[in-house]
Length: 124
Image (cartoon, rainbow, N blue to C red; front, top):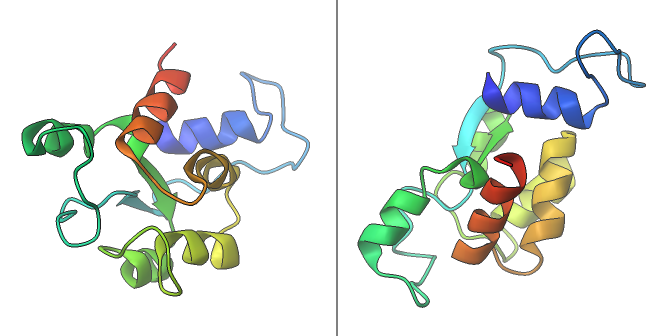
């Protein structure tokens, strides 16, 4: 519900003010995805953070997004970059403004710092 509300806000919905696109995001239709997956060890090396801190960071708002169930299962525990990476999946198949922001913040890598920055931007 929180991620759906963030998407609506990014679409221009504010209280009773309707967004220019005219539609809110569908409720309870999208899957929550951990951008850096809970099983991060294979594709996401630790850089300047210990594993316990990484495990906590994985579950913060800045590392979560919404995807269709089909796209979620395709990119689920994969790396950020590469031909079958999450970045390519998001760029080619996702329509949420929430994920456009994620792609801008992520650049060529999705890092612990990007997660913190994204969390902080929404929790002010």
